[in-house]
Every structure is written in C-alpha cells, then in structure tokens.
Image 1 (cartoon, rainbow, N blue to C red):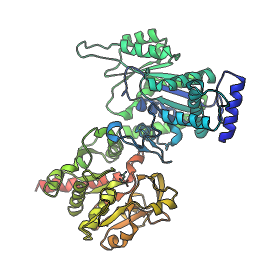
Image 2 (image 1 turned 90 degrees about the vertical axis):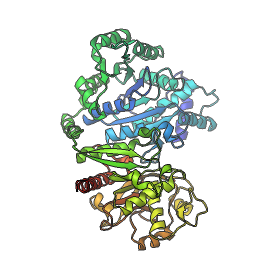
Image 3 (image 1 turned 30 degrees about the horizontal axis):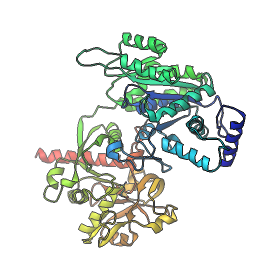
Length: 580
Ligand code: GLN
C-alpha cells in the first residue's frame, strides 16, 4: 500500500475507534496464522533453532512459512555490530544485514529471506517517527501504545501479505521481562486478540534447572518465567522445556498445573547431539500436530510432500557422524568467540562433512602472530586454508604469508571476500613483482592499490560510496575451476558484503602472469572470482562473495565442497608421505 493511503487509513481509524489496527492491503484475515516463540528463564536457549525446526516441520507438510526475528536493539540493522560481540553479520539476498539467527532460518528452511523477516526496535521507532513527520497521526499525540505497538502488528501482517504465508513464526528476542522487548509482547498479545481464536499460538521456551549438587530437575525458575508472561496477558499454548536430560513426568506435571497448559502440550526439548535431529524430535513428540490443531489448519497439509521431505532430510541426518577420515582446515580468524563470529563457515564445513563422509576440523589462527619464519609450522598438518572476510589492517601481513604458503606448497585454498582480495595482493607482490601492492583499505597511500575503492563502478550499480550488499549475478568463465564447481553453469548468484574491489587497471598484468579471473559482474569490470589454473595448483580459489552464507544442509556450497574434496586428497597424500 502506498504510504499516503496507509496514513489516511491510520487517521480514519483513530477518529472512529479505540482500536488501532493498521492493515496492509491484501491481508487475508484467517489465512495468515502465527506461532510466537518467547524465551523465559534465560537467553541462549536456542530459540532460533527451535523455531526454525518447528517451521521446517510445517513447511515439509506443504505449508508456506515465513519467520521473523524481532530484536530489542535500536540499531536499524546488524551491519554495524561487532561480530566478536554479537556473532557474525548475516547478509540476506536483498542486502539486509541481520542477526546470525537469520542464517539458522535460511539453512533449516532452505529458503531465502529478506528485510521483511527481520526487525529491530530502531526500525519500528524510526518508521513511527517518519509517519509522525509526514503528518500521519492527524493531531494525535504519538504513543508507544497504540502507535508503536501498532507498527509492530503492521510489520507482522505485512510479512503475511508479502510472503503469502500460511504460518508466520515470530521469534521475540531476549527473555520475557526484558524491558526492550516488552512492546513486542504487547503487540503479539493484541494481535492474538484481533485475529481471534485459532490464529496465534504462543510457545514458551523455558529452561529446567538441574543443579549438580541436587542431581534432580527443578521447575521453579520455569514456572516463574512463564508467570511473568501471563502477567502481561499472554497464556502460552505450548511449553517447550530445554534441559540437559529428558524432562521428568513429575516436572512436566508441575509446569502443566501452574501454567494451565495441558500435559500433552508440555514438551521435553533436552540436549541432543546435533541440531539436525531437532525437527524429528519435535515431530516424534507430536508438537507439529498440536500446532496444526491449535491453528486449525490440518486441512492445508499435503502428506505426499511431507513423506518426500522427510526422506530427504533423513538421508542427510543418517550420515551425520559416520565419517572415518579427518581433514583439518586452517582458518585465519581472531581467537575470541569464534563459534559465533564464523558461524556460517563452521556450518558450511559441517554440510560438506556430511555429504563427503569426512570430519572437518578447524584450526583457528591469529595471523597477527604469523610471519615468514613460522608460517610453515603454524600450517603444518593442515589440508586446506581459508582466509575469511574481515575489515581493517590487523593481521593482514600474516594472511599474505598463509596464502603464499598455500600457493607455493599446493595446499588447497579458499579466500572469502577479504581472502579473495588478499590472494590478489599476494599474487601481485610475489608473482608479478609489484612490491608495494596492497589495499587502500589498510594502506591508503600504497604504491599499487590493486584493491581499491572504486566509487565510479558503484555509481553504475546505484550504490554510491556504500557497500555492495546482497545477492548478485556472476558470469562464470567456461572451462575454469569455478565453472567445474558449479556444474558448468554460466551464471550463478552469490551474496556480497564489501566496499573494496580489484582495480581493473591491474587485471591484464595479473592475468599475464597466470592469475585467472573466472567470475565477473555481467556488465562491469568487477571481479568476483579468482583462481589458479588446476594444472598449476590443485585447488586455489577466492571469491569476493560470501558463499558460506548460502550453504544449506541439503544444498552445500560448491566452493566449500570443492575445498573439502581437495583437502581430502591433500590429507591422503600427506599421510602417504608420512608413512614413507
Ligand atoms: N574489508 C573488505 C572490503 O570492504 C572485505 C570485506 C569482507 O571481507 N566482508 O571490501
């Protein structure tokens, strides 16, 4: 709906009634249903994994699902958040920079998401303030209730229209009781009231304590957490208990009794070895059926689709942890909070490990401590090297040493974004003899800025001086390693998040010495993939994109599959040499 229509409608509603329910055009009340997932007791329960697993079960049944993560912070997006504090910045196909949880949804649902699937307090407040400036509230004082809360409801319903979803999965960030998430809860409460019976299911994900000194499960914290939810007027329909061990019947009975949730809807969600078994665990416990009943949508499911989806998924799950061979990939990342800062790389490795039947181990290297004198020691025993994305100068010289080592010793190499740029710099310096080659990002006055900021090119793409963000088409040169990885596709789509790129004036010099730019922008001289010919090096490739973001369990990233395959060959040779 055009903003003006919406504003007029908001005004009309305010004159006539106490209800404040801005409705997007095309909204089908009764068609779009909601599952709202909230956390109690503590954060870090795996709300995203839980919610995406439940969404997957419904998607497998042929329903259209759309998740949305609602963040309590005031940043408009996650682009400026430090990955070492908040985990990696996950970029969506439409360029939105979001929380890493969106990655969990995309991977488990095997579905591309966009800006409509993510919101923050900052987004909500800024659209309210924008409407206020545009005169949208017609003389009214603008308040958290009804206007801010109304904006949240609008956002949820807009997602319904945009995605045409049968079921929208709303993940409220943080924990019930957090001040910053309280108006999300109020919005969901109102939504449930307005949509009526069988439209909104509230799931309280909670935690059952099991203190080592007692050796038994305690439900009090969970009870109090859920009470807190009931205090804001929300009666959960389902209680899902995270716990170390299967939750005892007695504990479930207590929770059921004190929360008014029938026993059949109190579920044990105890720890399991792998997140990939969570969907089947929920299914075995019957949670999907309860949700369908509560939303009254059993008739929208398709048994044949579900059987097929389950077979495919089972095929994947059955191969987890079956590997007998190991490879080690070195990743040049900083040490702190690695799991979250490089979550997608770890996941991409995991996907390949299942498909190729090999354990992929990561060795994390802080390149600030690497130089020519110790690089061979640091990388000994590695079967592949990844230089991942990054910003700033720290550790870049060490990265160059790692790349030189990989290139000269035929160790499989994959460069991701910054790792692509560093591979070009390494080649320029050590093969083309351009001693002063660098990137103007970390050496502004360098003699050969082979990596530079090129506003002219970005202007053509309509980006000005900003980052290139999101999914973009890449033309692949036939007969190259990149083409082989992608089954000889001539065009592929990759996801980007960068500001700098290869300066086209150096391309001829680099290619003359054997570097191959095998992926390019369809019309501009923007280099997207670089490689060495396979007769020179078994696997040396880098991309300006972030293929780790689009690796999916059933559809792993071709770049990572190629790297791990090459690493397997490398490890076999390494073992053969060691055995004499
Ligand atoms: N810092 C580099 C750039 O902005 C690389 C970015 C990245 O690795 N994501 O171009």
